[in-house]
Amino acid sequence: MPEGHSVHRIARQFALHFVGKRITASSPQVRFAAGAAELNGHVMTDAKAVGKQMFLEFDNGLWLRVHLGMYGAWDFAGDFTADAVGAAPTDSRGEDSITSMGAPRVARLRMSEQETAAPGGDVFPPEPIGAVRVRLLTDNTVADLRGPTACEVLTPDQVQAAIAKLGPDPLIDSPKAGEERFVAAVKKTSTPIGLLLMDQSVVSGIGNVYRAELLFRARLDPHRPGRDVPEETVRALWKDWTKLLKIGVQTGRMMTMDGLRGKKYEAALANREDRHWVYHRTGEPCRVCGTPIVMELVAGRKLYYCPKDQT
DNA sequence: CATCGATGTTGAG
DNA sequence: TCAACCTCGATGG
Image (cartoon, rainbow, N blue to C red; front, side, top):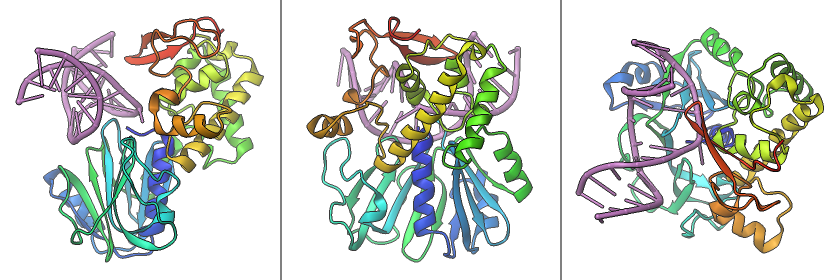
């Protein structure tokens, strides 16, 4: 259930621990057995994320495209350095995790909505957890994919086509080019900005949490047609998404509260309910003006906003 | 233990 | 517009 930041973090794990290694690929599921066979025994040569999709390249020229959708998750196990796991040393339950930085150690972790890591000590490779679509195994690391929306082997042309359908990603496109693409797409349509931010052909990687938070941070009415949003506001939205995405990749959390310091910042990192301006806060007082936050179903997704501040 | 709901997308009607 | 996909943590009895 990740938004763009999680997928970038996962791609980074593959870049660090799988790229350059020969991969044993297998699938217990009939639906992907043939796909796994195409990749099996080849060296992984690249790993990258574009928006919510991840692409893994192998030395026979084929790519694995993965989209986690709503429930997908990767389980990693084996040798990961604490440093590589990133700056989210504890999970939501406050359990101890990889805290000794620097020294390589055995880790077992799961990357989904909440990323958790616990010291292992188990045999390698471990038994897969749940129904595994594909297992990618090296000498000392393993990744299990469960529940993805998409998992398929593509040719380079097909990868290019898939990426061409996607809007700009602040971590892929140059800042200027990305911003111009985003501005052009928003300008030309009467579709509400609240829908445009969720449209992966307009901008990549934003999901329901970042959508609501970006709109509040811009004090922007979600219903405002794209072409009626002042251009400066559109540009500010792009720059803010760039900022939030980088924070998300760094911390592993969708931290959207500005200006928190010290204890409040730590609390927000640890507790989801302290982390957002409006997301999942129906009926609670707006953190700025006190007006109850409104929830509205739009295109089947829950949209949260402050009816007073967002105009 | 059963049910609900979720940070998503696709395709049928 | 809505069900289907597919998984599991949170919730309630």
